[in-house]
Structure formats: structure tokens, C-alpha cells
Image 1 (spheres, helix red, strand yellow):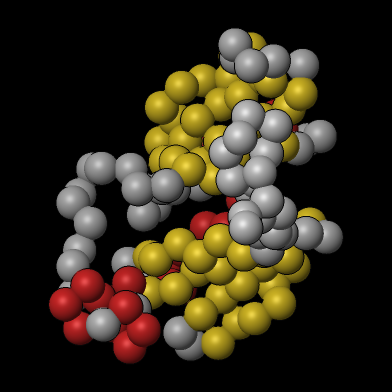
Image 2: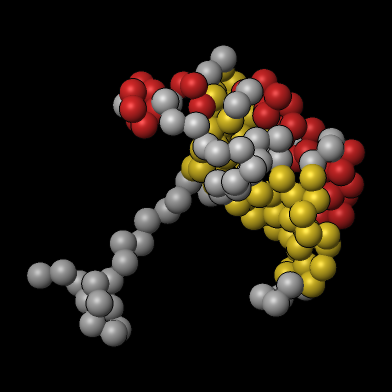
Length: 141
């Protein structure tokens, strides 16, 4: 019998999300962008994959889209995202958010929504990284 939550629905599995992997067009260019923007420590740096330790509980991986066929399968791995359509968002809270925003602007990241107080209480600015992923730099209000 499944465990039930407070409203009678199945209780969620309480796991820990450790890793997010972004499929990128050019691994070398994407890694150079994230190196310059955040300076996170690399934990893996091989020709087909780069991974960063973001904090004690989270890592960010970058993998060439062309390298996905061997585990997504030929048909799914051959698909390409439509240009101009954001596919994911990375939301990072930082103490030095304004310094990171300045670095993102210097790196040519496109700002889609400037630094402002948001309805949920954070100050945040929205950018697009070189692969079109939404990158949010935030600080609690």
C-alpha cells in the first residue's frame, strides 16, 4: 500500500537532486562561458563532458548535444532544439549577484529582464547563455 500524504495523495519520494546536465552546441565555448561567469570548481573536464561543483549539494554538467545519441537512442539523440526557444532555466542565488551580472554582461550574455525585485521576494536578473538557456542571477531581498 503506498504511503499517503496529508491530502490522501501519494507522498512524494524525498530524494536529493544532485546534478543538472545541459546539452550544448559547443562544449569548449559553453565551458569557457561558465568558467568566466562563475568560476565554479570543475570536478570533471574531459573532451565530451564538463562538470562543476556549484555547492555542497549541486553540480552542473555540460555535454555536447551530439554526444547524447548513445544513451538517448538514435532517434531522440538526433533531434535538435528549435533555435530561440529556451529549454531550461538555471536559478542561482548569490551574495555577489551584481558582480556576476557585470561579468555576464561583459561576456555578452543577453539580458532579457534586468535586475529588479520579484514577486516571490528575490531580486533577480534574467539572461540567456550562449546556448539559449535561461540563466537567473538572484539575491534574497
